[in-house]
Image (cartoon, rainbow, N blue to C red; front, side):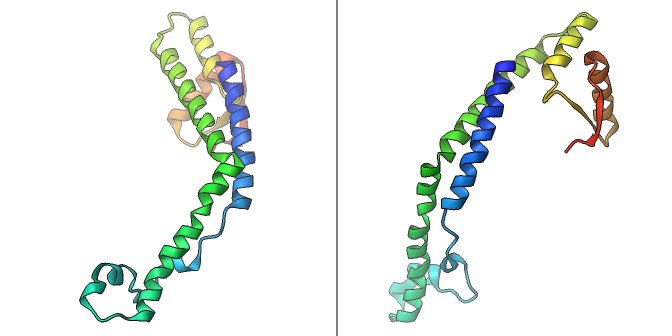
Length: 157
């Protein structure tokens, strides 16, 4: 579990780093994609064969399509930044951790030492915060008593 936690921390850091790169590379959402009152976009595209051609309406109907194709460069930015592979790796590690946690919780400790081992294994990231609700506060107090880790004064998010 310690190896998975370390890998998760590294993957999360890489994900945050690549997201910053991605955020700088991605293009802004074009104004043409913002729907405006009276926009003929969908109407002109679907029903233009029923009416006389209107160059202004057709031009406005074509603007979102053209803008969207330009904006698709966002996918390229995500690939160039390395964000998508970093996010996929982080999610895969999270799934692996979830599977390990499920197996850990399936084991029913029969002694205080067993409960202490379980509490130590799930204690992440190594500190216990204060909580507003009584149930979570009670669990935090139990984990604190079993592991010897104090409850911090900062409120957990």
